[in-house]
Length: 382
Image (cartoon, helix red, strand yellow):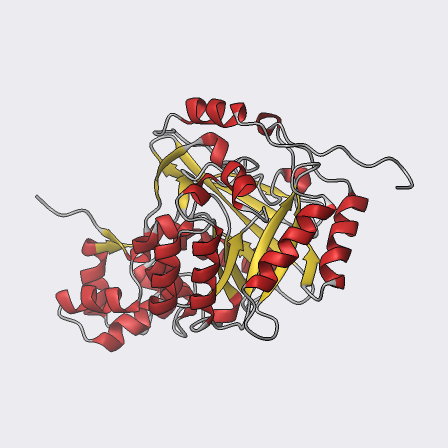
């Protein structure tokens, strides 16, 4: 029986070189092929004019370059673009392009769903179906880059930054993630700086250590609470890797990181984690692990509400007051600008379609029984 063609998006350069070697070809042919795929967006071997005709013939029967089918494409008023990609068996994942004056950022999914189940995240409320393959991760970048060049009528690269902040916990899909990162960084692929590729994690401590050794890129950590009691409720993974272990892993990562700081993401939830006492606890937490200089940055994220969460967005004045306390304490702090919320493309809104295999309905029901302490706002003028 003839083997099914291999999707070449599944390979980093070393993997593609090994594949070409099995076809009797030298490594430089793999490099040529790699450039055609990722730099030029070619999917038809007959277009690859500098490949030997004999190699193109071998590839025709043994390989293919397969994009993910696009189910929907939505373009926001602010230029943000969201795609829903079909990954088969009833599952679909989302990717989002965010244009800015000095960069173009693509937010990529790593899993169909997410098993972490953060209280404030729409993806987690859909449950978890499966990990994406390396090819499915890269197919989001491959399609978006080459679509956007045509859409915008430009020849140069459009996507300068990638953030692994879409659906899923990237470090729970480590074996597929790392080859995808290597393609993004490879000068024969997308040629991105390690500082411009960010992996976001809810705190999978052992894999943070491995990433620092294997493929250190910029790291963002979903913090969202200044103490274990609250973080246990908001980010269930905290029960396995509490704050002391997480902060230790962050410090170890800094020895390998391309930047000299970790980004902590903090979703602002009205009356839950946005009060002055939470800010003071957060300052104390950061200071406790400071060695010298600036070792982290805080990114405050306005919550994007969805009915199942039972949570509300912190009012803008409360976010500003919280940020001021952090800034006054000398912590580098920014408030994320909400982009693409008119097409449900903002942070925490990516959901796709997931055939859950983790009994998410029961898990969320149990989670909702755990009360979050909602702090009453002080009276005006106090």
